Figure 1 (tube, one colour):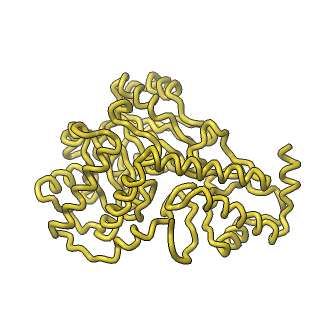
Figure 2 (tube, helix red, strand yellow):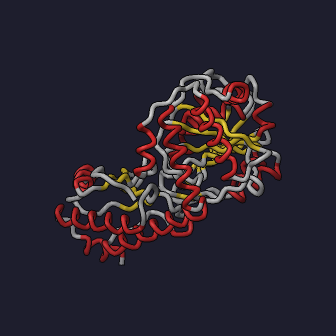
Figure 3 (cartoon, helix red, strand yellow):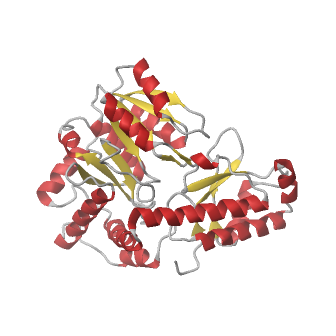
Length: 377
């Protein structure tokens, strides 16, 4: 699916992109040019369609990484006197708590073990305990461990109780079904360098039009003011400030390939095949996934590190990289782990190849995985 000698990125983004996506960055664009602005407009329309939000939601693109857009969404959607509940089961939930504190939004943490999904029942209990909470900020796929949180149930709960819902769908958008008609949300945030398989540099917020139009004055920031960006784009078709032109062009190419592949259902199925091939192969080597199968998202898999004195992640990482694959360190604090991503312009055959690369690396490091299998048994 790719060409060249660069290592395959087995991370939750940036990720390995197709040749066509890379080639889309070879042209320079004028930021005020009508042809470039037409690309931005077409992207926004197509992104809204992916969640079936036509007529109710609009797309506001923002320069920067996905975190920029998460902060923009919270700062605009949540009034300055609002209060945010954050179900917290990983590193990206913790980041939302840091954002709320940094921008002066009251927040409540709902602690959840990092190997467990959030539950609608726990969220309902937290909302009942503090009626002053106005919004829930939910990470859909928490890639700290790889947990998939139950967005449909949480969205229905928030709608029933009249609470605003902000969804960090950074690592799920485009691969896992999200339907605004049955999973109501105020705002949903994603970015270019994830499951649509673009390159990093632009985030976007899919936001209910009525919520956005009522948000004027909420933002603490000029650069991250979603309302101002939306109004200016509607008036001029242009970005307020210099856009990431090459990123936008590459994202258009990536989105065209996504739609040609078959959209969310087909993209998600490819990732599920990747995930299954990875887990099956790693089990045969003696590795144990950190999560139970029923809570594992097909985006990134956390594995327990070998219980062997010869194991060192930096050495392991470097040797696997020499064989053509870039892994990801663990994000957990209690146990030693590493992570392997399943997304990008790769298929299940590539996942079997990485398992082979890991096996060769272990053999070179003198790590006895037969002993790991015996311990697991």
